[in-house]
Length: 255
Image 1 (tube, rainbow, N blue to C red):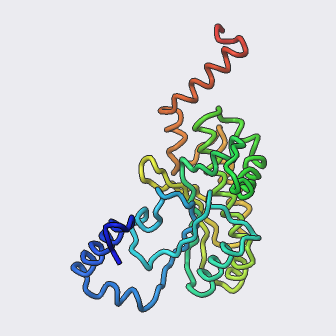
Image 2 (spheres, helix red, strand yellow; image 1 turned 120 degrees about the horizontal axis):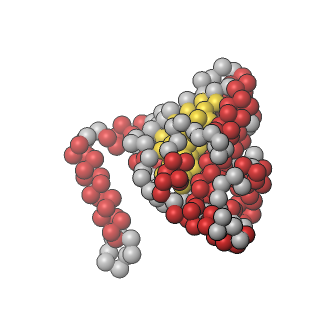
Image 3 (cartoon, rainbow, N blue to C red; image 1 turned 135 degrees about the vertical axis):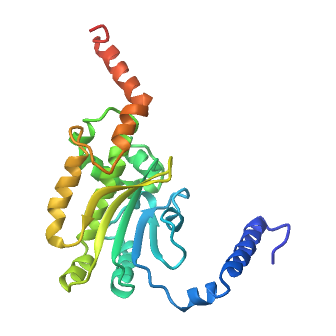
């Protein structure tokens, strides 16, 4: 029962108001939604409360199948994630799987700086593996926000690879099912989704697409649809401060 002693009272009130608005707009909304779900999209994203899948892409309930975990990681031993992918691909027959990272991800930040967070440290080893794999590329960027953002992008790309290498996705492609896996990054700071160009529609296309996307994130080549590199150069004071501090430390600040 909804009482004043219930700390969730306001949530029940919000729900009542939401139901009322929905029925006023569309009296058949819930009866139609109850019949079935037929989403075209599977969203694999972070559990961060600031990244609500449906709202970000402007789709109502029933249009997006969602799986979330810390740092949007896809691990081949994670039966939870694999079960979601299998249900989405084999039963719902989604056409698109979107792996969506987000700037400001606390999990990626912890992995980048070897910061202990507790039990989740075991999970974040997978992101640390991404960091180690791309250590040379990450070191092209100064310490601070720029490097942090690159790891977020690289993590999303690597998780797309992991999705594409599942038996579920490969079996779907082998039987001719139309299915594309995408790597995206959401900006909590501006609400926009960035396309990393990591869109794979067949097993044969995976390696070439992967190499192209990783190369686009080097300091010598920016990704066309991704405005974050320009934003780094223009807005991020910590990059300039890092460079200045390095010069002072090495004694070259007077050069």
